[in-house]
Image (cartoon, rainbow, N blue to C red; front, side):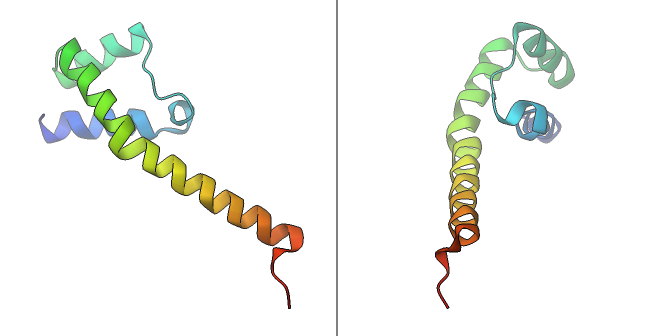
Amino acid sequence: LPAGAVATLKAWLLSPEHFTHPYPTPQDQIMLMHKTGIDKKQLKNWFTNARRRIWKPMLKKQLEAGKLAAHTAAGGAIE
């Protein structure tokens, strides 16, 4: 995909309003197809791959960081 299209899709995927539910609505799909110039199959394939390669590892990292922070805040660090 063109770099501009990838940047647009990544921006949508990683935006705070979509990060917790990275599945574009039919309206979002139409808007993204118009903005990027890609077709529906390309869009669906990109999101399937991006959720696996970009979103899931980021979510995992955030959860681990959150667990670590919660553990430390709860007195996990012993002096």
